Amino acid sequence: MMAVRGLFLLLVLAGIWTAVHSYERPPPRDNIFVSLSGNLDSTSPQQVHVSLVGEDRMRISWITDDQAPPIIEYGTASGTYEFSGNGTTSSYKYIFYKSGQIHDVVIGPLKPNTTYYYRCGTDSAHEFSFKTPPAQFPVTFSVAGDLGQTGWTKSTLQHISKSNYDVFLLPGDLSYADYNQRLWDSFARLVEPLASHKPWMVTVGNHEIEKLPVIHPQSFTSYNSRWHMPFEESGSGSNLYYSFDVAGVHVVMLGSYTEFEVGSPQYEWASADLARVDRGKTPWTLVLIHAPWYNSNTAHQGEYESVGMKKAMEGLLYGARVDVVFAGHVHAYERFVRVYDDKPNNCGPVHITIGDGGNREGLVKKYLDPQPEISAFREASFGHGQLEVMNATHALWTWHRNDDDEAIVADSVWLTSLSSDPTCKKP
Image (cartoon, rainbow, N blue to C red; front, side, top):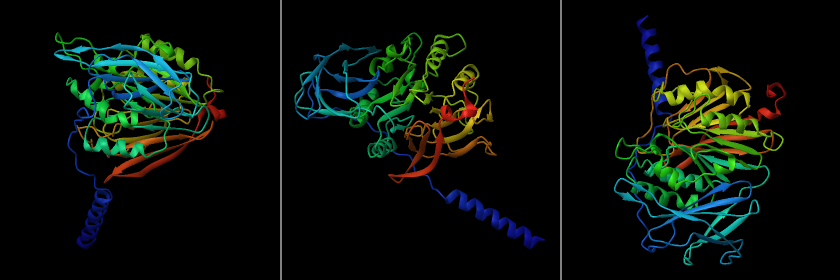
């Protein structure tokens, strides 16, 4: 009996050893601060990023230290700018900090799947380019949340830059500035090589709130000033929630840290927006939030932004036959089966937590045990995801783990759109 017990113990220990050492997570990396490049002057464009506006327009945002005209010159050949657009300039104050001049120009109409070259203001020394998304399938989204500014963030961005994506989606927690406004400047410089080249569509997380009682009582001042999303075009009254179409996909960006209860402005807007979706035109519907509604990690359990928003809005998304819900907040990766009301449901969304972009707070490595039946895959590693929507019926989701600076596909699944499933017709 003792020999059997000894053998059993050795087998258990061997299993634990194998499980622990099947993937050894890399250590944290240092924070990054990106200073202004030495070849830029006070009117040179910096922190350039682009975002979608409607079906055929693009917003270009940039900052200069001093006054400069909010003008974009652009064209389809490098060095030849046959079109131009004018916009607005603003700035903001945050306690003792005063931002640079924030320029915002919407250009178009633009052709789909086309590279445009552009220059900002009167600066002729720096040319940028972006590529518009396709008008039809296939279309590819890159997804990562909770980016921050660390060595792992840089690794994640390098992996994303090598992928052939059309639009980047970020479910909250961008810069991790946390009141230090110069970190907003650093973050925008860090992501500029990507964000000036492909549209970045973002929503807010808890690190964007930056509200200080008495000293600075307004929330989201920096985020709203720097990252203007197309909320007006989607009938929203707030930059914290909006929607847009790209190719055959309708994307809804919701705000976990603004009112979401039944009857709130966000709820009423989301209800109307989802009711207007034409599945003949956009067979796929995606939703982004920050605080996940489903989560088997021990971190961030029971938070109102998760529990309360799920209680208020899960039925709304289920009734609209939303295909996928992306979330951040939890610094790990987890994919659930199609789910509704805490149970597997073939007509519910696939919930994916992807708050593993590289932030300074590190990974959260403890999960609830046993793993719930609705949790299909979970791992605490940095990385990013990619959703390749092939056509009206099928899409491929892959999660790419950052493994010693190589992007390793660690999880993948084929998805079928709910609009093509005859058993999931909208009630």
